[in-house]
Image (cartoon, rainbow, N blue to C red; front, top):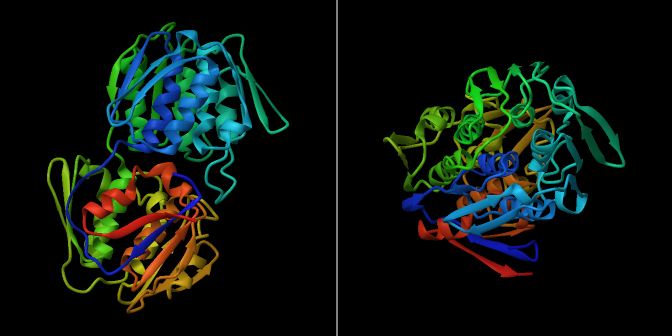
Length: 421
């Protein structure tokens, strides 16, 4: 898909039925670069067929790796032929997670030249903590002309103290430390599910990673890693988006192939709103139960409320009874979707980093433009709720992180399609 099409949604149709969630985007963009640490073939299963994955394939091939990808089946990566270390902006501009190539290439060969990433433009998302971690392991870091140059004659394990909790920094240091000499201990580490999944993938290749999922992670470096076959976890954020969409349309949806314990922060807020949520071992059912009430939300690092669900949740609250507040504590500028929601009739006021939402009886279809991945999800949710037709432009942002989202929603009864512009 590309930005040369638009998405059209005729709202007012409750979502009903069962759907299976795709593999995790946030895991995929960490695990694929991690395969560079190994000189034997790795097979990765359950990857989502999204633009970020395709961008990483192009990057690995540029570096010299052999990649075979069969969507919805597997990706086979053989990095034994990879000799490159330079990743240009023409490729890094396609995804934010391209900065994981720094840690992977440092760990592989002690040298990386990676242009600053692109992806969603909702804040600066500095990588200073990543670079601090690399320096602690003995890397020499320079920044010239929008490219980060990192070099180390030998990476040596060390204690890494993050000033703030950083998911990207935690992953990048894990990658670099996996083949460093000695033991690295990351303090104030992030605890997200995809960090645990990355640790499990590294360990499947023979790495020695302990403590993932806690705020202290220990990595004992090894000289070599071996190939493996690994299945990534289901997508936590797609699961949450589908849960929110079901609630927004007052539908009855069962999401299969998910991990309910990863969704506890969202489930708690939906229950507080008055939505019925039923969990089984690997499925979640969302259905209506009376009036949906306003709630207050504050984004936090995991296991708190995910920042990646803040925007779609804001759309849901636009028609909740009462006044809701949504406070964003992770990214300071993740509010570009608000103007588009106002075009649809939402009553929203932004005060510093807190959104005040006065619930309205109805939203109305309008032409809207996507500014980043999760803003796109928010506008899809709003379109499903609204009266009339919503036209969504710049759909390529949505394709970065959601695998054929319109097909899944159509299967549940949504009236949604794409048209060329």
